[in-house]
Amino acid sequence: MQIYLDNSATTKPRPEAIALAQTVLQQQWGNPSSLHNWGQRAATVIETARLQVASLLNARDPESIVFTSGGTEANNLAILGVARQYSTPQHLIISSVEHSAINEPAKLLEKWGWQITRLPVNQYGRVNPLDLQASLQKNTVLVSIIYGQSEVGTLQPIERLAKITRDHGSLFHTDAVQVAGRLPIDVERLGVDLLSLSSHKIYGIQGAGALYIRRGIQLVPLLGGGGQEKNIRSGTQALPAIAALGIAAELAAAEMSVEISRLQRLRDRLFDLLADYPCLEITGDRLYRLPHHVSLILSDRFAAKAKDVTGKTIVRQLNMAGIGISAGSACHSGKLNPSPILLAMGYDAAAAKRGIRLTLGKDTTEADIDWTAMVLKQVICRLMPPLVCC
Ligand SMILES: Cc1ncc(COP(=O)(O)O)c(C=O)c1O
Image (cartoon, rainbow, N blue to C red; front, top):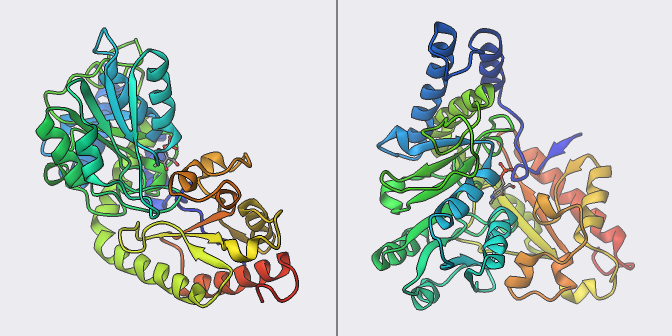
């Protein structure tokens, strides 16, 4: 039995996305900037995808969607594209639970002399809007807060945070890579100025993403070149990946309400099956949580008896049993550093190495969940000293 429970790392491309990418490669492979028919057929592919992504976000103006190579580039474009408009260092606010695709450009700005405020979170990973209010300064030009945390699943109160920011006169960006296509997003209601998403988290194919840019907001491009994507993102567009993103966005929107309740039910079933198991505790917010996301930590009381057991150990053992999960965020899983997210939530350095993440997807069934819960308990039972977790 093979069970894939790492859908926050990437999702299996859906057949409709693969079929469309293939058609595009065979029939609409022109350069969208070319004036002839081949180019125009390719341009139609891009503009169709733009409408589909705009519709997923309820963005009234399809021109507000700029295609990128993925979530990382969209985040970098948002942070650095705003920052590079200023000739002198300003102030940026982020949270202490951002993805590295926000943390790294923020560190770069710090090197350039910018002041960076990293808002604290509570033990469940939530930002307090009052902390944001208190941190805004005259020279705060941008606030960027992750919408759904990839490692612990916590959702932030984006509507309130965006309102506080915009009332102050600053721009608001959210990294919605884990939320877009999984929960409804309405950029008008949320009041965000910039929003990032990624195709391979929503059953598209790897290599495409998008940044929503509210009309009127100016960004300095990261790349110099042919001026594609209205001069904001130069480089010939990755046509098959963008087409796949478009169809994945359209289908995600169509299936969303049914899929949210199905995933929430399976997620809660897994939590329930583990509820009476003393060796694992939930991390992240139980209520404000991504519908497909289960994150756990080997409980402190028992872990003290098996100090060398980390999240990675559990990942390896489950992999041998045919179940794919991750230890914290996929992008950090190559290293055995404590998770910066769990540290920010108040866990100590040893505990912050003991987190695991199981993220459900379109193909996850109730039988997968029941089997996983049983195997997970057995694996931990075997890793721990006799009788401690059995
Ligand atoms: C919250 C978040 N932001 C950004 C990214 C980066 O997206 P991409 O892999 O499309 O570059 C990820 C990927 O895991 C993510 O989870």
